[in-house]
Image (cartoon, rainbow, N blue to C red):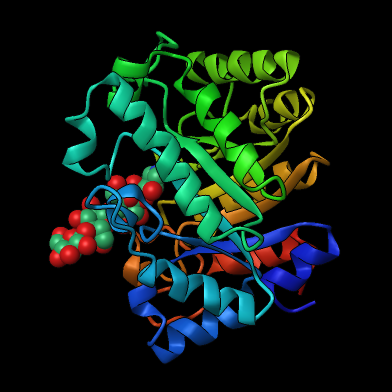
Length: 305
Ligand code: G3I
């Protein structure tokens, strides 16, 4: 099997990438995407500011371009993201408690209704926990005004809108076992015990020299899977180059393959040319769309050649 998507499929997984709508018209971008990947995540186009920059005025045009592209080629779509403190238009932060609750549930309902039946997994809530050792929630309009129950409320609303989509909690620096991932673990355990609808946990997996692939990555994925949720690697990129970068990528793939409920891997971009990391080369294809050693290592780890 000669492509990432086909090799992953042979292992019962998907292999996806973040996509930006404004690059789909670039021939090499589209041909690399179409040849190699079988899942897409809109990099920015489904975020609150992109879709509902003004209250009750919904603009789906850019996200639709990505979803249409994916659907016409049989690719899965990960929805990213419904409730997040960042890329949140100012009007949301200005609302009082009751109004904010209405706005949050309305946003979830409108967006999920528009894409109903087209989304494999939704990142319902993104990055709700603080970094560092506290394991505490991050301050946000949702946390500060609605309280800690906002996550549960978002998931319950999401389930009523599209019962066919998997509902995920997504975060970063939760890839290994630490105070932050312990806090997310406790939340997921509580949700499963109380019947709050959650199907999956996304591990963003943005790695660099300060935050390398953790040695307990597989064990951490497994402990979440053991709670009865799928796990997904959702925004993978690894700074560096050459054989060291390739080895780190292989370690990520091997960790996912070792966990039966690790259902897929998404890298956070097609090409180094458009990575969100301005000073980096963190992806599988270089700026000229040539395959890097990291690509070869991923394909080999997936059992392809
Ligand atoms: O759309 C405007 C454009 O109109 C303007 O001319 C331009 C000038 O700077 O900015 C454009 O918006 C940028 C947007 O990307 C689209 O390109 C924002 O400034 C920029 O901040 C934004 O960055 C995105 C970032 O999320 C914002 O938080 C990155 O592309 C995106 O890769 C990144 O993705 C996040 C995930 O959603 C969540 N996890 C972390 C990950 C990496 O930060």
